[in-house]
Image (cartoon, rainbow, N blue to C red):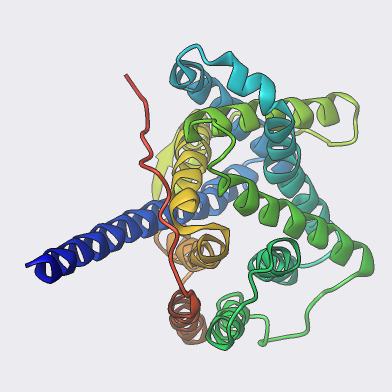
Length: 330
């Protein structure tokens, strides 16, 4: 009887872990999908006279304003947690939010978008290396094989093999800076010991990121250009503020919160590889909203990215299931 009871408990535990894993994957994929929508939406604004820096600043500012009240409420008056983790919030805002964005747009000012994205999306490899060197979590052969397949798929999704890549040393350095910012996003988001609810960390980071980008704009380091013309998506016309609102609420506020929640369940390594689906989703959104039909090689690349993510998942010896996470919204 005791043996049967132990078997039942084991089955229930495995079922719970599997259920939580599914939730984590769903949150991470929803976050990646939200981030992916930002490119096509921004493209419509760029075509009307906005520049990238101005779009990013408005996106971060709107997201910060939306999340700040909920982030404060989620603390439930526990200001001690915020005082103890203010360095984490500053680091998250500076690296994961403002740093990644600023470095990426600086990179594309010197080189083509495809190679810049490829370098930035080596962030999962940086996460694996960090966990190995810092925490002794040595990746297995299956994890490394999955990572290789995912990167190969990324090359195909970005269609880098169809022609010569425009690469410059300065652009590569900026892209590496964006990679550090992206890796920081996964590493900091996975920390469940800082006592901050996901929505509070996201709100704090977005406030810091928006403030830093604003200071860069005021100082003249970032040139800000904006317009008030209507935008067009999928043959439909929208007022200029509509995509900006969607960029702030959907592709930033919701995407960051869901990403933190998913990463705390999956861990930084697996979550960083799941996030590669953002590139595939961006290709699909560009097709639906902008009429940019993906090439067959890009579809093949998407399949390889998914196969690589599965390989990384199977290579994980255990899946650490984080505590229950709640999105505290009244």
